[in-house]
Image 1 (cartoon, rainbow, N blue to C red):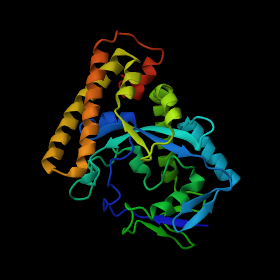
Image 2 (image 1 turned 60 degrees about the horizontal axis):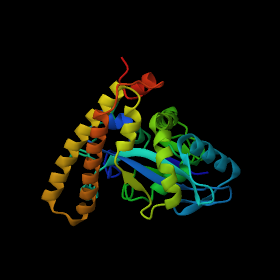
Image 3 (image 1 turned 180 degrees about the vertical axis):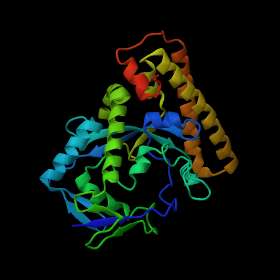
Image 4 (image 1 turned 90 degrees about the vertical axis):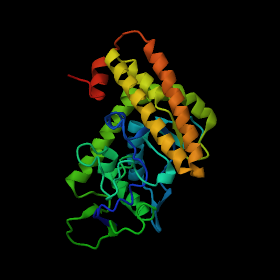
Length: 311
């Protein structure tokens, strides 16, 4: 049984990229984080498979496989039959220039400017992973002890037997209520994303993904325009909020591109071209939204509440 303790020293080393963020979180931080739609292939995990767990391997048993399947079915989208993929993860996230090597919310003093109530749920769950079941968080933690963001830090340590206040994982269990709650809250937020826009967007993207298979780079990033279109169709208020987001994102992207050009870093070029495609996608969304009629769908109230527009 593996026991892992966690103590955050606020060194900021693991805050080396923008986090995964739900749509409401991206809207709340529309002037700080560039939003993107990300597509991650998820490979099948069956009983008997061996998962990397730091320097060792974890043999998946029937209970592990069942718990993985439950989460996949709830939060992910099924891949085409007959492939090595089990599901696609369709999610939104922050995007930035890799050359910056830090989350946009990371301050010079190593602290987070959006810590507290405004902090993304994925960050509150760190170093745990909501897309893996609780019983396999020990595997996640052992993997993360080997990742670049945690190397050279002492926040994740193997713990001996006995009571410890900083004990994060005790074999297949998470002893602290706050950690279990952080995972449950983030899973609920991801489910809301799926229900309010994920299923609709995947219905459009799914056929192309079935033909394409897993991307060579491991995942794809796309503009948020398909997400905004799905949400904007719910009601005039939703459309106005999505239009504001698109406008604010264009301003933020143009600012970041200008800064990148001043840095003259060759590795920034691909991201600059990608962000320029985002701007064009937002322009197309703006043209579409301006021509849309004022109608409200059957889920208008629920979508407005999801976007934080409910009175």
